[in-house]
Length: 481
Image (cartoon, rainbow, N blue to C red; front, top):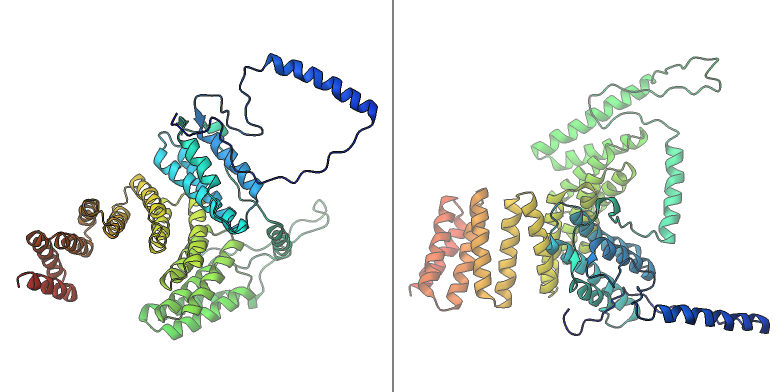
């Protein structure tokens, strides 16, 4: 064990306000003294044994700690701190990513460590804001634990699944939602989501099934016409969108979503709102984008459509990210990440983690960013996602370049070029050659810089990127002067 590491490491628990000690009658006091004598006798028998920390899953007397016990104690730490719902979900998301990795046949300790550290960092930030002073108590606990011998393979039968805490406000919202859902369920949904499927009609409810046969009711002609009209409106809006008639397409989707609401067709509404948000994006209508993505996410939650929920949150995060609203962007990115984790959408998690890392770079947090890039790259490797690997290695190269680690930057640019060539992304190759050339020029290696600029120029000509060709030609000309 490294020097300076305490033998017993406990998760963070805030100061507990204890109740005053109640005074006892004299005869009870005599019984207490007698009882203490018995306890001392037992303590004497065990005075050479190390005692396990109170109320923890980790047995610190053992030479090895299992990841499942670490996750269990982290969960208790969250329960004790009881952070805001948004912070809780963010922390739990990272813990569940660690738990999922621990269930694999050969879990990656790097991914598990990274997720534990990210969870600890977020919890420390919350504590610091709450106490109005710096806090690294949870981070220190995790760092110290990871210095021990850790078994990163979680027993399948005892795998810890961390569930988010539910605040009182959320519980109240949930009750209201359930009440609304109960009322909604009394009315049968009119049709499936604009798919050519047979219409399933509700069965009439009879008070005495034994006496009366169940009768199938036919929908009223007016409802059939409304369903057909909805299909026509939706297809018409799609046609206008394909032709680039944005205003007509948006108007058609607006009419579609209103009619779908009247027909109580919740399945199609999230998709319509996503299409309306896309049109708002094409028209550079930022408020329209946010409003429609929010509605899409809300409606998707009502039908448990996690895919559209995740996409809506990711897109809202991207919008806020583009306009420099880091906190709002991170909040939506983390929600999207959590949903992708539930669906085991590795590709989605990779993309979102990369974007979160980019924000940390912009905020001047290179260490946190690098941890996230590593996690994202490990996930991309799992699914052999060369596109994801190319983007991540390019971003890591840029991070090292900005920090002044030129050789590391050059290595990651070389890796990025290899992955971009595999997927045929020649634009990415041209950009990486240019960045590498800039580093060589900074080091005074003009001939090497010129060679790299020439490679970038040849690629840009091959793909007919005239603007980039002009930039590379200018750089090469300036080197020859």
